[in-house]
Image (tube, rainbow, N blue to C red; front, top):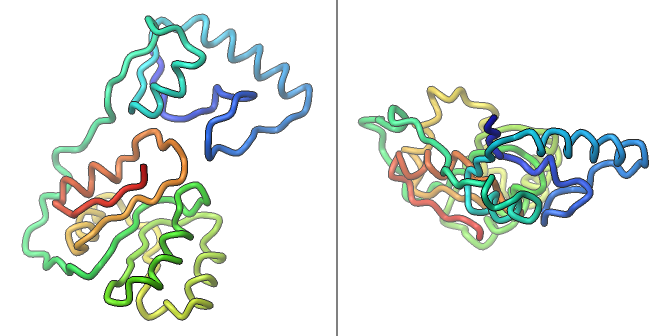
Length: 191
């Protein structure tokens, strides 16, 4: 049995930087530990999708059971033609959760007056982020596109001169990095 590791759900009660703690009730801890031990013991192999995931899981899994196989990409993605690239446009694609760093990117837009930011995605923090944009007087330069179907997403990348991935945690290797590269959009990423 092989498990693909693309999150840090097995880490409670351990800590992973940028990942919020799970519930701390005694009942939850006991059940979680029993279930995880049961599952982990019965797996033959674990496939980590990135070196960040491999590094975190190497703390709790035997080396012989852990293998790195980088995330896959879609070879059909990004074959857009006749789309004009705007070098002063930055694109963010992803969820609206704090650990993705979108609020920091919005704040940094104050320092980039010649650039516009197109935000593709959605999430629980949308209202907060829209208010942040408006209160910072950036609503003329920052556009929220909302959810975009994957079939149309490459058009958004192709239009942008820059893609920013501002994650603040050890990301399991986000597919958006591959998508940006496949559309030949320059990618700027946090460590």
